Image (cartoon, rainbow over all chains, first blue to last red):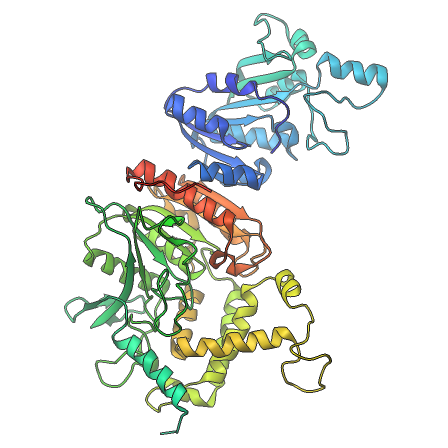
Length: 203
Length: 402
């Protein structure tokens, strides 16, 4: 799974999770979020992580994590076996984001998805004026080396949610410093100035 | 009676002594406590030989059962009485080791059908002589049932953990499926929920090699004072190939010649790999019984946890309270990661608490016996986390986590 830049979205993601709930963290990295949820909120957390170093780190910390990925390992989970399924900064790296999102909505009562917004004005500027695929401090890899194969904008994501009949319970856009954008702003404003998006969805 | 060299006599006598009254503790069960077998027969009287390490705590909550692989024994962390070699899992089990005997009470028992003191084909038949092939065929579930009776006898209700690799891993899964309430944590390593067609095929080659040895005598070789050494060592040679990866064989031996500069145009061990395999085969016959090899390989072949649960593996773990840590190795082609992943998917479908790690190594199936720091780190981390949940006190001096 991929992690890019700082993880200020974790703070926001954690704030959306109810205490004492059952959580599946897909792409849990070294277990930072899981550990935080377990310690601060008494959450029963499970994780899936692709990188061996990440998984070993998690298991050595006593967390329940399996080595796997969102594309291959979600099918086995039963419907509504978790209160929340979290996919942070990973959707854009999956082979089949639509199926993955469907699985999230099936397995969890709620899905929490965070992703980098490809519609951010810096991205648009680079494409518009330099005519090159955008590279930012937050997404530093060139086009041929990036694990992010399915970038989307906030607006793209909202229409995918509509297509899947998912209800957007909450949406939060974060600017470059991790600050929350004005809550009343329209989608186009978020899509232009939001660097990160965090969505709380349910079926 | 055929005449033997003295060494061979001494070794085979020592082995029979270990079968009847082993160097380790042994629990004996009389006719009033028969062992019920899957084959539809009962075994009585019978016995189970085991070793323990560390101390059982006051509330009897810190017991770990270690399950051994095909040709292992109860001497997981103590010197082998016949070979004099250190225990097969000395790297994993001991004071300050991942399975920490300063913290846990570790039990390791010889499996049913084995030849190190637990009832097996080399044991005395109550009807007279030695069992040989008169012993009913045993299964992994039978082995586990025997272990459960031992655990009962030791006064332990719930095991903190059951840990094992290969056939030991099969026993771990069987324990979790048969006695979910008695297993707090389970660590199946380099194993799977069934034996594949390829696995069965290799075992069959080994069994046929033993049976083709004229000294096997239809399994009655002990009565005739013989040992089917040739067949057993060929079985071991074939099996040994499956325990290592092609990559490791290539880097360890390649096509290097053994103590010579050129090929001899004959059938001596020209190549180092040939000499190595012959050595593996010939040392094996000193410590293992040929009929045991037939029985224990058969038990592995018959293992298929899904079949025992209406064809759905997840059913074996429904509502399981056990915490699992499944471990596989990248270069293991005998129990490839795919097999472990099947177990993990079944556990996920059953809603079980599961961790799964695939460890990067080129040393094949045998990696679980070798010095693999990642294996130690993961096992230690998992057991420490589980012990914390279980409320087992850490040892006074906490060893470094690395």
